[in-house]
Amino acid sequence: MIILAGLGNPGAQYQKNRHNIGFMAVDAIQRRHAFSPWAKKFKAEISEGTLAGEKVMLIKPQTFMNLSGESVGEAMRFYKLGPEDIVAIYDELDLLPGKARIKTGGGHGGHNGIKSIDAHCGLNYRRLRLGIGHPGDKSKVHNHVLGDFAKLDAEWLDPLIEALADNAEMLVRGEDSQLMNKLALATGSKAEDEKPAKAPKPAQSHIHQARNFNQPKKLPESGPMAEMLKKMFGPKGD
Image 1 (tube, rainbow, N blue to C red):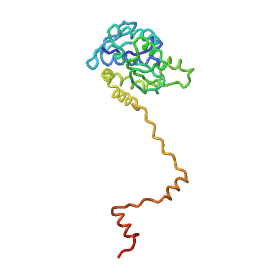
Image 2: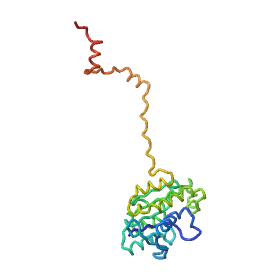
Image 3: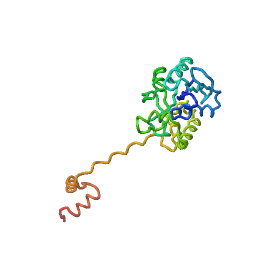
Image 4: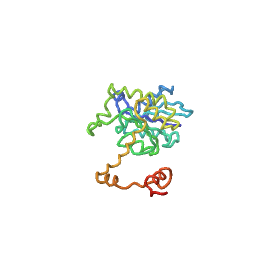
């Protein structure tokens, strides 16, 4: 079994918050793939179904974000799973809106939901980060993540969530690169950050250039060109 854990806060007042993009993602997967109706278990709402021939449980912890690991950890232990069987889906401040990244393990990046899962489940689980952008000022972060998505955000948010639901089987099969390409195409972004261009070679000083210009160039010693030069400039023969 694979657990796809979408992170967020329970309650209608948080439903459209940027912090709840993980809930939005698993809701879309549940609708698209005819999973079971949501039920209450493991201090969470859960829904079960099958993706890519694998039994999958969607889970939305109802413990509030800071205690997400209590719920996910309880489900993991009940089914005798390990952290490698978990995919956490959550918001990422340090990615531009619409960008997505996935990796196994790593740091929590200050995300309290991930801190909690680390504590209750271990570190070796896959993390699908969905970018919500940074407000640019640390003092504005709290209001940013707990603020609702703006109407204009629908231009990238809806295609991102729908593409994730459409390609959820890739997530289960571990086809991470292919999934990132699908999400990037859906949002009109690049799957990977552009590599920085190579730094140009430092310009030579005028003196250095002059020295190179004045240095005699080595003449060819063999071949047609060498023969021609010998005829033109060599010692006169018979």
